[in-house]
Amino acid sequence: MKKIRNFCVIAHIDHGKSTLSDRLLEVTQTISTRDMQAQALDDMDLERERGITIKSHAIQLYYSHTDGETYTLNLIDTPGHVDFSYEVSRSIAACEGALLLVDATQGIQAQTISNLYLAIGHDLEIIPILNKIDMDSAMIDEVSDQIIELIGCGKDEILLASGKTGQGVQEILTAIVERIPAPKGNPEAPLQALIFDSVFNSFRGVIAYFRIINGTLRKGDQVRFVNTGKHYQADEVGVLRFTPEPKESLEAGNVGYIITGIKESREIKVGDTITKVENPCKDAIKGFEDVKPMVFAGIFPIENEDYEDLRDSLEKLQLNDASLVFEPETSAALGFGFRCGFLGMLHLEIVQERLSREFDQEVITTIPNVSYYAYNTRGEKIVIHTPNDLPDASVLDFVEEPFIEAQIITKPEYIGVIMTLCLEKRGTLTKQHYLTQDRVELTFELPLAEIVFDFYDRLKSISRGYASFDYTPINYRQSDLVKLDIKLNNENVDALSALVHRDKAYAFGRKICARLKDLLPRQQFMIAIQAAIGAKIIARETISALRKDVTAKCYGGDISRKRKLLEKQKKGKKKMRQIGSVEVPQKAFLDVLKLE
Image (cartoon, rainbow, N blue to C red; front, side, top):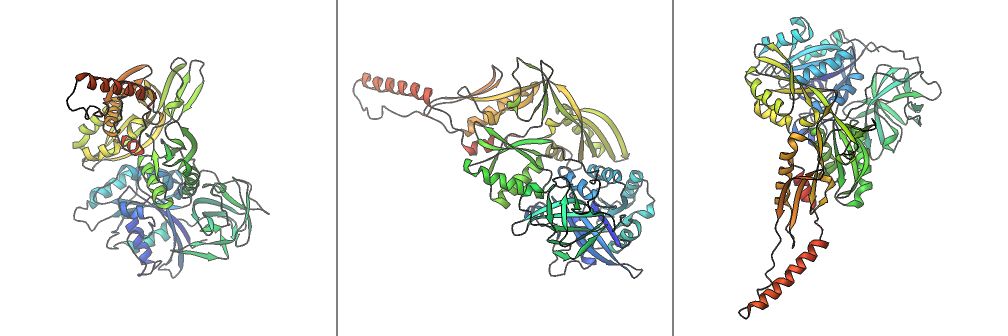
């Protein structure tokens, strides 16, 4: 155990975590030169295309230290985007140390601070590293001062490196061995292992990744998963090299994988504890937080018969992405589907893309919203996930919506435009703090619903990419929210309903009506598109009827012949309007929901 080091890499998005991980793999010769490629640990096409890490990736390296000993290093590369902070929290739970990576050209960003606090909360040893020092625009002294101010370390403790050129990688490996403590634990104690990730393999079933806290796990052992209470046999245990490497046994302090032949994805839970059947541990491992979804949206199959396939796909995806939560729901317009909880809009987009690529499931997503608390006149509290759950106005007392504390770090010249954006989103400024002369931290309290759609994109564009953003939920507050219904010929389309603030309802209603007018195909009868709050219509657009020229065959002759045909057409249209229903094509749904 003295020769094991478990560590993760934490940083803001695009600060070079994956590139530095590549260099560590190269220097320790974990990957052969033939197999080496950029972002070696990012195994999803989506991660490579977007240049972001979506999943945490664990890999074991062997490093020969200057004292002549060979050390086992378990590296967990983590995502940097705020939507995937749950992956980071799981990786941190399995480590004793963290490499805090800061881009020398950009300085400390919001997500750097947020991930750092997560690591400090778990008592991890922090090794600060200044990356990209080979760039012409690197501000080594200024950014070093920012790091010293943030974590209170000495200047000589900050390592200078470049993931691109490989400079400083040897020093990082030495620091990992010398500064990060070896794992504590007793190999003779009852088995106690934390599951921090899992993947689904169509041939072998569910593969769980774990970190052993106490005890020893051998191939062929009878194991029990504490949370689910199920018993299994360990068919294979091993360590995570570039390809899984089977071992006869793994001791306390190590990170590895277990294959038990589980085929049902719901039988395994990330954060669960593995122990042995004959000599179980007394307590499950604590300190693993449950996921808190921020954004909710309905996901429906395009064809209703694909409902069961979609359920299987979501269950398999949930194994690989523990922050996804879902439950069945039905919609009058879209049929059977699922209500899913996501950590943010990028997470929603990634899930939709992965369903399409990995499981061949094309889906329709309803307008994303957040969950609210409604209180009725009897004082009962109801959790609202969809606008249709809102009680009738006659029994509704008030509605509370979730608020967040947003941390924005930017340059002083962008303070004005960022304040305007946040005030427009019903935010209030609570703190303004200068980190250095040219970096300011702004803290706002904002309703979560306002940042769901386009807040992050707009923040990036008005600050020319110089603003970084992170948030934490704080509480629920009373708000003047109304349910906005969209009607087609007086019939509600429940998939387009939304809960919005009264001040913004009129503009939102007009926008949706105008968009539907462009997207809906014309019928032989007139279609009225209306946005309504309760019984009050607040916006309306009309699609005029297609006019069939019934008098085309009358060339000349008496006007009464034409009038007779027009009267007949008028009656037909009236009848058609009474019995004709407006079908919203799937493409129109998709386009309307891209409204923002």
